[in-house]
Amino acid sequence: MAENPAVLVTGASTGIGAKYAERFARRGHDLVLVARNKARLDALAVRLRDETGVAIDILQADLTDPAEVAAVEARLREDERIGILVNNAGGNLPGSFLSQNTDDVSRLIALNTTAVARLASAVAPRFAAAGGGAIINISSVVGIAPEFGMTVYGATKAFVTFLSQGLSIELGPKGVYVQAVLPAATRTEIWDHSGIDVNTLSGVMEVDDLVDAALLGFDRREPITIPPLPDAGQWDAYQEARVAMLPNTRQANPAERYRKAD
Ligand SMILES: NC(=O)C1=CN([C@@H]2O[C@H](COP(=O)(O)OP(=O)(O)OC[C@H]3O[C@@H](n4cnc5c(N)ncnc54)[C@H](OP(=O)(O)O)[C@@H]3O)[C@@H](O)[C@H]2O)C=CC1
Ligand SMILES: CC(=O)[C@H](N)C(=O)O
Image (cartoon, rainbow, N blue to C red; front, top):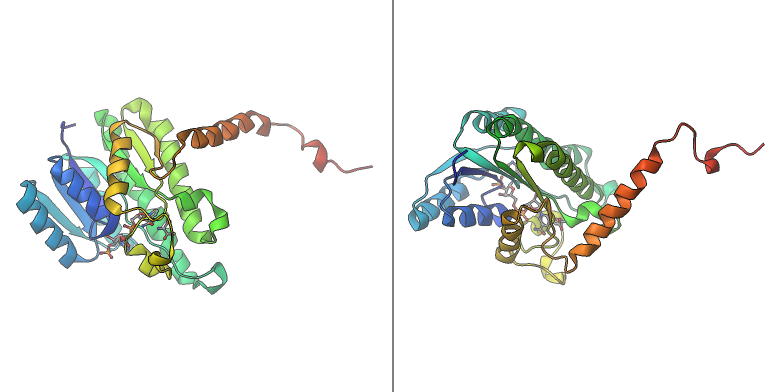
């Protein structure tokens, strides 16, 4: 694995993905930029080539389309220069579960979960064989908060966090670093597609601050990075409570409260 490998960023046409592309370009990494909007990708590539001199390829793909996601998978499998995958592309839906259209729900799940897992699956064997490489998965704090009322979106992000934690356990010993990033509200266009005016929210992070913090976590090889969380000990306590419960789930008999009263 090269010391400064190429980085493939999904959802690079705007928002968090575009900022990752910029930051990695400034670190001297060549890029492969993936999204649907080719005009935006072209404009970003022209600017970053000009400003940094790195080589940039563009892969136009709708990651909800199986044939188009397969083309990105092939690139990840075959292009040995790529040593970092940023699984960032994602979306949200406006409204409550009852108001959301079933096909839209299915498309959101395809983008936020299936594509993320497929791309990780495509690249992981090559990374593991090389004993290096990194996968950055952009999750969300909404994935631990069913109370926030974004049920399908949050469920997809719970998947991304779990996938990342599991991959970290499986691939870490093979030299592959896996990071889940859990932003909270960050000022990007996603809010326009979520039916929420971001200007009505408090505590909104700017995208530069979010990505710079996430990259500090990356440099420190954190498995989970939650840029807005002031006390990292709260996440650690949450994980410790979960892990402490696990041995108790292995029982031959149902718990006392589920036994029929005679
Ligand atoms: N902003 C926030 O508050 C938070 C965001 N996140 C997560 O961060 C990630 C990036 O979101 P953010 O930058 O905010 O959102 P934006 O809406 O600004 O950007 C989303 C990116 O994903 C791409 N994308 C969307 N649909 C598809 C598709 N079908 N195929 C390929 N690419 C697609 C878009 O490009 P194009 O339209 O050109 O295809 C765009 O580049 C997401 O996973 C999101 O869930 C997590 C927590 C908070
Ligand atoms: C709900 C959202 O759209 C937001 N991206 C978030 O994850 O907080």
